[in-house]
Image (cartoon, rainbow, N blue to C red; front, side):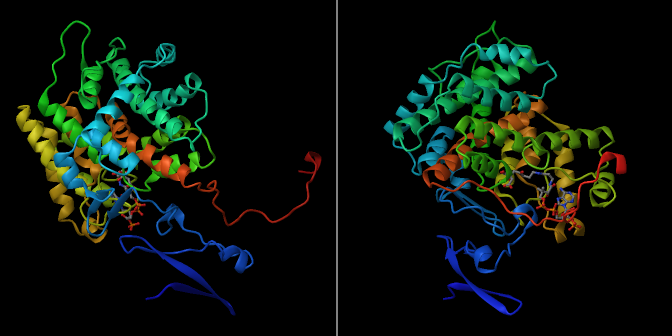
Length: 428
Ligand code: SDX
């Protein structure tokens, strides 16, 4: 059993301990590298080979297409669990008993009122404001209404902050959507389940009784579970590094929302729908767009394809693809966009460029088709991703703070000018 790594730099050789995770992943612990080697560091653009932390929350194997939350497979959780149950599992590490889940939900409902002054902030946004910008701003603004910083060593205070954001975040999500739809801001009802309440807040019209469509509710429950965590992705790493400066939970989440907004990350689900619409408008010419995606001189990428970690099918994409078919069928919707998506997928799965680079559909490729079938505007798709990812971000922030992790501060290799004297403007 090898337990050390050897590094040779010139005449000098150095040894570093290996650490092994519970899934037999190996890492070289290089915390002594810079001091032992008189300043040598490693560099790894995009952190493709670099671990930022140890974590017990989510395990994924990109080669085998495996995803597990606290040891439970995503397939089982998506099939059998309720989103709030999965949120509890991710945050506290175990599936809740009936009583624990009921208490968790009660405590969340107790904190689900958002200070009415937040309405003034949302009113100040133009109707054209992107809801991800609204959500990030309002999440950060919650700090103004909940100013006391959380003593993370107090179980009660940590729990209090968690149920507060689990209660208020869905309200902010719903208000962002109602702003787009020109509907008055509202609340759902504490008599509803967590996911049902989100639906009621998002869709209920002021002049009619809102009835929950069970097909939509089940699909939304599944989508939120599938998005709930994904180990050290860009937005989660952002939440962890912002939190490592001991910035508060709400401020750290606001930063994570901004990171998720990018089209290479969570913003891809909106970009996928826009891409599929463009292809459909262009006569469904998938071959033309495949050529664009492969053309190095063309910035166009096949949105919803490829993944930093999955070099096999994203297990979430498989589940969402089946769900998309089911939801459209159950709702009696025949969405030609789904046909374009399937045609594009078939093309890509048989194209050497994509096969050689192991580019498969990811979580974002089909999710937008279901959101659209639910009547959710395309600019809200990434907001729905954030709603699902909230418990994962909370769990990761909590793990980082309870683990007393040091402030994140990467090194660099300087490639700028070497020292030079200042010359007065008259001499320049
Ligand atoms: C999410 O990390 C996570 O876990 C994220 C996420 C989560 O749950 O948090 O799973 C959610 O962000 C899913 C990904 C959503 N993004 C997209 O769908 C945007 C389109 N995909 C990409 O831009 C890209 O695939 C990334 C960003 C997802 C991954 O990029 P990498 O790992 O940095 O890979 P790369 O850019 O180095 O690409 C490797 C090669 C390149 O070609 P070569 O230089 O080798 O010739 O593959 C090509 C790329 O040009 N490539 C694509 C492509 N994705 C990669 N070519 C065309 N279309 C694409 N979509």
